[in-house]
Length: 401
Image (cartoon, rainbow, N blue to C red; front, side, top):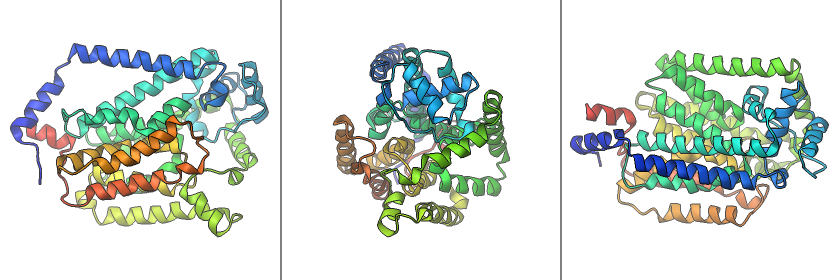
């Protein structure tokens, strides 16, 4: 098995610990340019074509103590902000997730685009940096591929919040052993779209009980409670508004390019329960998978597979939601690279998806049905062979000492 030697690991850690001013300048320039591009893309005239405008309108509804799940009210805010649309989708995120939209409620649509873009790019940069450190601080710059990972790029272009989900998962992976309360608090970001993390959540609960890692659970529950209370402060009836809004949207009639919906359409379009069957099977599989590996469980390795399965079996998931799979992508890229195997298969998959994004293929298109199974297939290809050849953050620290 390939391992980083003691001497080389110590050198890499020491080099990573030094702050290179040129890298700082380059990172700041990248951030400024990226924010400028995205803010322009989400300008007042174009925002109606992006998901950002929905969050902006919801933030304004919430700040003014309105119902953030009121379709007519949100539409009025959008039109007042410059949107020429006559309809829109109801926000499906739970009230505990609305703390992210609150800052947008105090600014104009254009200013909010800058704030939102800044948050998205900063979250992506931090996630990539932490994953790079977690996987051994390799100097081959392979981690830079994260900036053009197609689902993450689609998130940036659409103003979607999938990158915040990625940040939550990454912070948990990085801090679960050293700062469990903070790691649990970070998981609250995954609560923005909990249906994507059903197998992951079941496995996490089993792992917490097995390892008696209750501070993680306490941290997550505290932040979820605090964010829910914040939403209740602005709208005391927000939970009833949420449930009513979910029923009124008729999401079962929407075409969402994911495997669960495809299963329902193929078998019985009217049987809504079929759309949730894969998630149930995924949770059962997750318990089995954890129980057979609990004594040697590594979140970056085994948790990556659980994330991949969770996205593929989710009741509904968009292509942009696959941004949360970046930890799995990084893990597999380094594994394949360390083994001297070809990265061409990943290049073909990512390149095809990237062409779809650049070509402007709508996120509602069936052309994105293949991506979630493709990332899972790539993972299985990457882990085929020797195991544990990538040092974790803890292993790097031990070797450095």
